[in-house]
Amino acid sequence: MSKKYWTLGMAGIVLIFCFFIFQFLSSTWKIDHLVKQMTPGKAGNEADKHVVLIAQEQDNPFWRTVEKGAREAAAQLGMQIDYMGPIRINPAEQTSLLEKSIAAKPDAILLQGIKEQSYEQLINKAADLGIPVITVDADARASRRLAYVGTDNREAGKRMGELVVNEAGGKGRIGVIIGSEQADNQQLRLEGLRSMIANHKGFEIVAVRSSNISRIHAAKQTEAMMTENAGIQTMVGLSSLDAAGIVEGLKAVNRSDIRVFGFDDLDETRQGIAQGDITAAVVQHPQEIGAKSVRLLSEFLKGNSLDAEYFTTTDILDRKGLSSAVSSP
Image 1 (cartoon, rainbow, N blue to C red):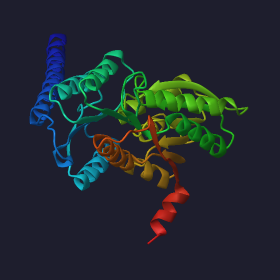
Image 2: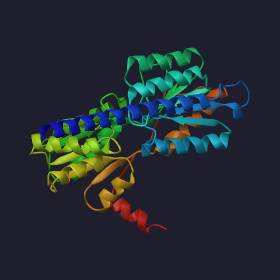
Image 3: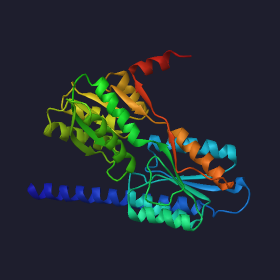
Image 4: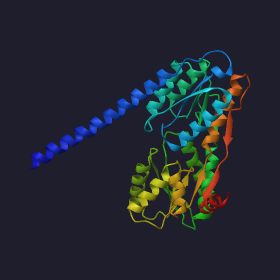
């Protein structure tokens, strides 16, 4: 009997291994296919300009909205956008995409910054080759990128801290889920949140974990966090999928007494706010980020100079805001 279970177990392991190999090969093929579709940049008028947009994760709702804004602006300007990104968050694949994109010689590149020396060196290589790079969502400040377009993430973290202090009802022991430890935007949001919380007596961040930009992982990290820190009274998610994952994790450990705060305007977040599972969210404007990045590139390619940073706004989404949005014509 034990031999039978051992055989079944080994078969299961082999199947799981084959699944991950398939996912890896599929992702690699898609990357190569996307890059091969790219045509080298050409000198000429604006209609010839070819821009690559490299997302953190291909089908993440935030990045698809950035893509939408970029494509709409590019269509107005007669520019071409090639959109690509890892199937699942993978900084190594982002680096590979950047390297292959540079080899294809586009007119410009839009990408998320990563706090990694090899990635920053590739951005510098692009600059050396005359390919301007604009970072979006997260910056790569140590590189020679042309400009950053997106949220002022430190200020967004402070705004989240202010929201928590005002809305948490004195529930001052805080657990935090961040999207990625390698993303500059997440570290800046956490830094801003910490600075605001530190200025208010009775509030304390007692634990921080990473979701790896995964709703399922956010749920698992929340479960583990609540097991280890039963005194937590408030949970904060600093990337778009975290709040929904936190809600799932809290339900798994039967904790309905926790206030939850999230980031970004996703359907899952709106649903959580409407049902009372999520108190509020700090909302970015990814469509504006994509559109503004393309418009700025157009200006630069015409010979105009750019500033180093262009910050987009954030808003607060709560139950009151949902109600007014539904009632407005």
